[in-house]
Image (tube, rainbow, N blue to C red; front, side, top):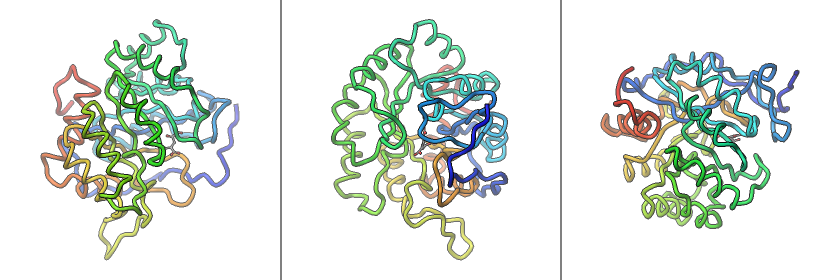
Amino acid sequence: MEFSKTPGWLDWYAKPSQPQFIPPPGSVDAHCHVFGPGAQFPYAPERKYTPCDASKDQLFALRDHLGFARNVIVQATCHGADNRALVDALQHSEGRARGIATVRRGISDQDLQALHAAGVRGVRFNFVKRLVDFTPKDELLEIARRIAPLGWHVVVYFEAVDLPELWDFFTALPTTVVVDHMGRPDVGKPVDGPQFELFVKLMREHDNVWSKVSCPERLSLSGPRALDGERDAYRDVVPFARRLVETFPDRVLWGSDWPHPNLREHMPDDGLLVDFIPHIATSAALQHKLLVDNPMRLYWPEQSAGEL
Ligand code: 0GY
């Protein structure tokens, strides 16, 4: 089947720069995607966008280039609840990738077990209205109750303005809850203002809530400006991510978000994204928790953290 990417869609960087920051051995990129290839794994009929292809081999090459050891591959909405591209990537990762799937009510126990065997360790609930149609919360809660006994967790993606309405649902979930991209704060607002305080309160009052301190390129208003040749892009996002890393050092994850779905004005250089890490995790101890200890505890609990 032939797919044409959505008009205006930017391609991911074919030749990202070499980061100056060297991640500690065994580091995990805990948020990335595979797209198709569409000819092999068709995009879902209900999708809101058609991406460019981004294969497992390209993802694994990027992992090695950036100095990472492992990936957590998150099912993107363009594949709906058809997890075949994700499962294929996991099965070819030599144990170096885990997955977050999308499933619907009514999935069989056998299918859940097959996903688990492939390396899936959670499901994603997406509340970003431009990306998905509405799913009733009772259906999502039913799914959460089904996956909890497998030791899986729930990944949630939402806009900061929707947190008040989603609060009761999130706090009723019976699993660990991992929030994508810090709950997408408006970084034009103060880091200690009411919007981000609400997110910090969610994490403070509920110790099963984790956050990915990811996607500065999506959240930044100042953009990728590098001053005086320094690699200091997206600095307006730094206070938000740094606050979470320093307040909740054992419940934060980092991810590249490659291949960066839905970006139309600016496509980040993945090398620059890695160089963002020491600005938000400013000591070797915090970096090790963010990149190794925390993702290993959540995704590879049966293995000790460290090098492969
Ligand atoms: C992201 C961001 C986006 C898309 C998806 O599943 C998806 O389609 O996650 C987005 O457009 O904000 O986090 O990868």
